[in-house]
Figure 1 (cartoon, rainbow, N blue to C red):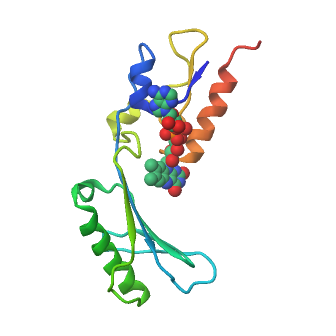
Figure 2 (cartoon, rainbow, N blue to C red; figure 1 turned 180 degrees about the vertical axis):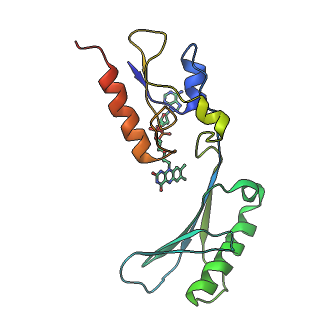
Length: 162
Ligand SMILES: Cc1cc2nc3c(=O)[nH]c(=O)nc-3n(C[C@H](O)[C@H](O)[C@H](O)COP(=O)(O)OP(=O)(O)OC[C@H]3O[C@@H](n4cnc5c(N)ncnc54)[C@H](O)[C@@H]3O)c2cc1C
């Protein structure tokens, strides 16, 4: 059996596992908006709350990684602030604010501090037929899809032959 759940769930489910805890959150805001672009494009902003803007013909989406204290802000405040930033960058009208959806993922990543990294483990557990996968295991990569894939490959490689 391979358990492939977030680290804070693995800690509850698997004995003797002491994985990194939850790390940083990610903020996403999606605006329903006729942007005028024909092909999807994206832009990185600096000196702003907004970090990345992904623009499609009928939508603009903002990503803020390691969103920290911004996650405590009210959705309407965040939506207005990021819209002002991206409208300024693209030369769009700052008002009216388009319809939006704010998504706060408070536990988007595992704890990638030096202490958290020390707690990443390989796929083996103290139970012979129970293995671990997940981006938080010792993949050599940060909290990414690629890390999750590598962890799955390592868990499968560790399985005893049937
Ligand atoms: C908003 C956001 C944006 C991101 N952007 C990027 C990006 O651009 N590029 C990138 O590489 N990575 C990105 N990541 C990180 C990437 O999503 C993760 O690294 C990856 O999904 C981790 O995969 P995983 O299989 O380890 O865990 P998860 O994808 O978290 O899968 C764990 C699964 O376990 C299930 N589960 C939880 N608890 C239990 C339980 N008790 N019992 C059974 N099942 C359970 C969950 O429902 C989930 O399906 C982002 C993450 C977030 C949150």
